[in-house]
Image 1: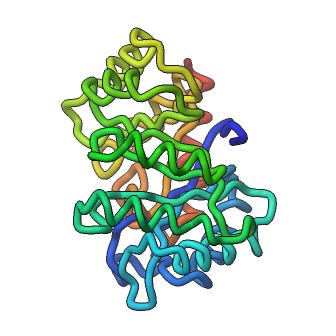
Image 2: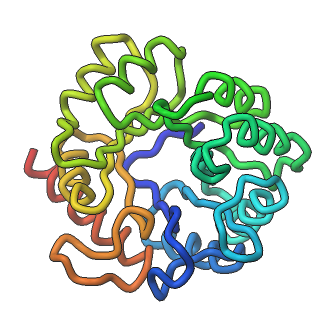
Image 3: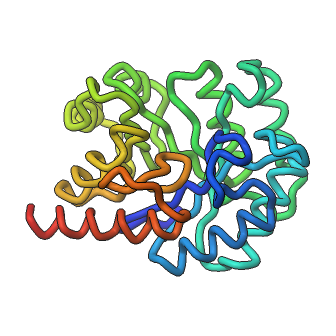
Length: 246
């Protein structure tokens, strides 16, 4: 999995259709949003595939359609997807079966990487299945406890240090990963209220980060943004300023 120097775009997340005027859900919308975000400076794309009704899906046909659409507009950009357990109603076996079904996808429709949350049951088995499919694992670490658990699960090429709550110390989580010997690239980001502070911290630490309508609908000043590409430009500006001041 190619490293990310500065920024990955998270196009849609689990937000329902209509949550933002520019929120992409269909393959065609994801392709356009990805193309614009990459033109603005994003180096990788993360997305949540949807079914025909706009609901999140891990079914092979929906994953393949979303990935292939983005590849058509961004042929040289790594494309990744979620494996969030909530998508299967927290049914571990159903998620495992759905992801195993990606084996039938041609390489062009198969994601380059997939995020797997360490705190969700079934992490180890799912990570092994993804490895068998040639799909790199991004391990989602939210807490100190997650960092410790990841040391038991084995190595991954990228760790997503995802700070969802203001009371979680990002630098302590990063330090814990080092303490327990977890290797791999670190990508630091937040969501909602923690989004912009984590981008600034990532810049200061020289770590890649993430931005997109999955993480926030507003800029650092609290004003609504037009689309994912606008968020990418704002994030790169903040990251670069923080890096220069470090």
